Each structure stands twice: as structure tokens, then as C-alpha cells.
Length: 199
Image (cartoon, rainbow, N blue to C red; front, side):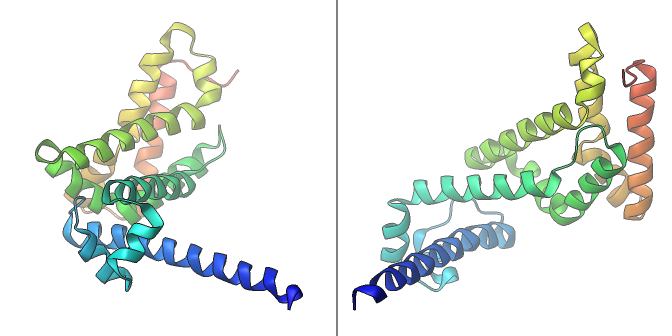
């Protein structure tokens, strides 16, 4: 009997983790479907196939649930965009793949940013995350930039921004591979202009 107890406890923990992940996934699905980052607990519970009490048992409150969902998506985004420092081909390709996956949804959030405080918070986190990505990916050039470091970061942020992807992919209707090539040329141009060559 005792030998079976750890297995039962592990099975319960696994089931609990799966339920928690399903609830967090329901928040993300709801946001994508409705662009609503302020859903009711009932709406999330219904989408996750659980009761409101189950949601509260896992997260304690609606605000805690929404904060956890934002954190979870932030980790997913960081994983999607991960690229080794200095490898520009991989970095730009990874970024375009990320924009292909989430770009349209983020553009919809940006359009509603002025009218929704929670959306504004999520968008602000995204901007900070993008700047941190630039600092990590372009570290070899930034380390050599000296006093021009902040200027170079600003220019690289613009060259790799979601709106740069939008202008080429959505407004111009170019293919993802063409967008990737043009963003790469933008990046190369910035690095050349700033004379920020790899040491």
C-alpha cells in the first residue's frame, strides 16, 4: 500500500499541473479570439472545461490568474525568439518566424493599447523584451560600440521591430522569406553605418 502512495501523489501532481496549464492556455486562447485581457473567471473556466472554483483553487484570484498567464506567454515568446548572440542569420530568421506566429495578434493589441490598461502593460513588457533581445543578440557589436551603444540599440530595435515586419509583410504583401532578407539587409546597413564591426 505504501509503495503505491508516491505514484498516486505523482499522478495527482501531474493532473494538477495539466489542469493549471489548460487554464493558462484558456486565457491565451480567449485573448486571441476576443482581444480581451480582462475576461471573467466564468469565461476562462468554460473554455478550460473546469469550474470557477477549480480556477480559484489553482490561482487564488482573477488578477493572479491573468498575471500568471501574461508571465507564461512572456516565457513562450522568449523561447520562440531565442537566438545565439552574434548569429545574425539565425536571429533574423527566428524573429520573422515569431512575427509570422504572433505578429497579427500583437498588432491588434497595439491598436487598442491607449484604451486598455492591461493591454498597455502587456505591450510595454513586449517592448522591453524586444529591446533585451536586441541587446543579447547583438552583444558582440554593442560591446564594441562604446559611447554609441544606446544609439546602436535604438537603430537595431527599429530595424527589427514588429512594424518593420508589418510594413513589408502585410502592407507590401511580400513573402516571409523576402521579409527576412530585407530585415537582414536593414540590420547589416545599421551595423555598417555605425561602424560597429565585430572586434
